[in-house]
Image 1 (cartoon, rainbow, N blue to C red):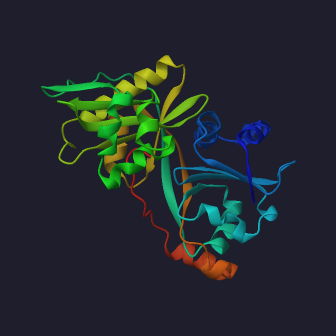
Image 2: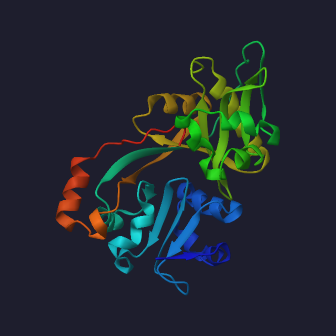
Length: 278
């Protein structure tokens, strides 16, 4: 696979007609922000391509156009792909874990909770880069799709809950599509029962509505807290699907035998990646 430029990705617009609204947001985010990469088997008339950003990937086209080692850049990613790609994925990586996902969209208006005394919920600005940079390491994924703390803070697509200048919770558009924006949220240690994440999500959702887009929420089926936050914020389930969480490339670039790789994927069929609101 070779890397395409963003103008070359734009030429693939006809392919996007086959995408469902949820996955398309990743490709549209890469095209509009420049954060991420696009790979294809060839420039002219590609038969297969992958768009990836922040360890999420969209794989489309014909699996027959792939060699397993072509997929090495998608190691340790969450891959959205038709089931026809599973043999290629399981041959390319030492582990492929099916991950049941749930896609919600906001359908009901919900009143925002009153923030605790001294807490302000507001949009992030460039002045908030130091606070976003101080997020714990296990929350750093929240700004990965914007290229880091500076990109997220300056994006105009993030809201935070602050007390005396300290960032307590944060909700942002993780992937900005043409018709919908996928929301992600993190809450600081010890703040999970103060409804700060909910306040940030609702403020961001109102912002998304003013841009003429729909707010979307994607989370693991087993993530009860994330699902509860989505429901409380007026999001309702529209679809369930499966992503594939990939491991390391097969040893020394030699793919596993297809039967062995497929058996390993089945044996490890549990969601092992934890995220909040993604």
